[in-house]
Length: 117
Image: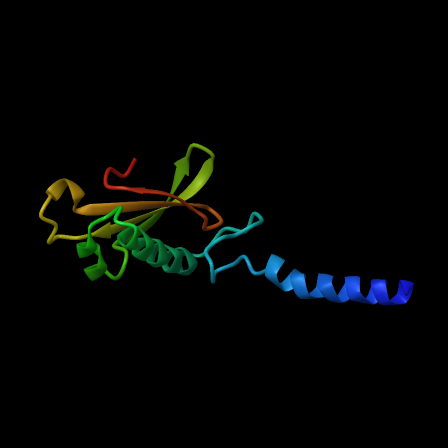
């Protein structure tokens, strides 16, 4: 019986370990201190852009803007951050012509706004 419990525990742990390690580029949730590449941040920015449109937080017209206009690493409140800028020259409200997204250096989404701050 002891052997059975040990084997069952090991198999269950092995099955769950893949899920625990699944955090990565596929879901845009990262652990550790490795700095994300621009390509990874670009992929995550596109994902969050779609999420923001779907939730109604930004206008549906942003769906036409497929690629970020620029990337930069800035000094944020808690260290280095990625600042990703999308541009929509066709925006009716010129104060919302730019969409800024902020990510931790590792690639985790922080916030999005139209002010860049």
